[in-house]
Amino acid sequence: MERPLVYIIDDEPDIRELIQELLSENYQTEAFESGLPALEKFKQQQPDIVLLDLNLPEQDGFFICDRIRELDPEQQTTIIVITGFESTEERIKSYEAGCDDYLVKPFISKELLAKVDKVKHYRNKKLDLQTQHSIARDMAFQAMTEASQYGIVLQFIKQTFATHNETELAEAIFQTLNQLDLSACIQLRMDHSNLNLRSPDQPCSPIEEEIFELLSQRGRIFDFHNKTIFNDRHASILIKNMPVDDEIMYGRFRDIIAAIVEGVESRLLDFSRKAALVQVMNNIRSTMTVLEKQFREHETATTEVMDRLMMEMESGFQFLDLSDEQEAFFMGLIEHSMKSLVALYMNGRDIDDQFSAICNELSDALSDS
Image 1 (tube, rainbow, N blue to C red):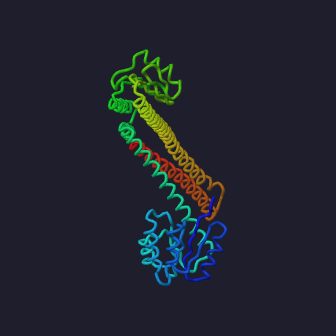
Image 2 (image 1 turned 45 degrees about the vertical axis):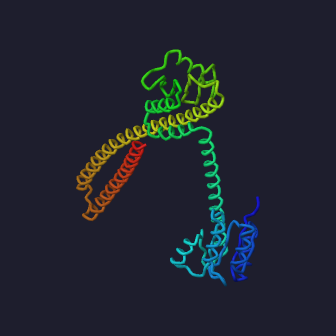
Image 3 (image 1 turned 90 degrees about the vertical axis):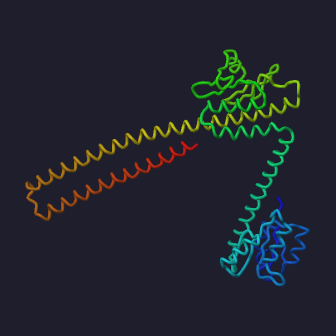
């Protein structure tokens, strides 16, 4: 992989040489003693990173930074300004000029290398995101150009986010298929039962259920006559009027329904995860109830034991012929032990309260999803 190119713009030769030496192993470098020659070279070869001294002869670093941003409106070059002044005003002015980071003189080698590596990773990530965004945008435009029906997929995915159970999801599927003038049956396979529907309020016929059983394992898309079944792990959609005589429309519908099935599968997995979390929550609450009961029983038993011990010790002192100081010493030991037991109990209650708070937060999050 080609090493990133770094422009070093600084009027101090020692600084330029030091930076070049520090970056020589992992970067290509080119040094300039003022900004104008760097701008001319920038027009011919755009660097990945610019290390820019603010205190330059002829034109200061802020002016050079502005010109760089004019030459690089997409901001594919990252800029680190170098200055001998560390002030809020200077930092704000650098940010407004379009700089990406800030380095104060005098600096140590590790600090410089860390700054350069940081903006390099920032630049790579930004370019990756720009590339991904560009690809996604081109694909979206292409899809909209080929067929306006593809927008229905986006609307369907958005609609599924508002569904809370399999029945509501099935209604969303039929609404979308009706917009495409497609007649269909659907099967949603859950942990303990299947939901088989030919409309939101009509179940599938027995033979349609058999078709799902026979063809749900025949691949993601299976054609027979003028019908096509689209399968995923937990969902199948059987389209009964595919336009097999119209190759273009048939291809479009294949893509659209395949995407819809993937969205349905994703939402069904969300339902399953939420149900599992709810079950975990219920188990935790049950466990917490048992622990609370055990805490109370432990508290009662401990109190009874300590009270009985105190009484037995007090009654036993008279037979031991102990002095007052000795009795006070032993009583003090017992009281200290009792306080330690109480502290342990309270720590346990604190843990119980923390678990209860976590359960409440998780419960609130699940109710909002």
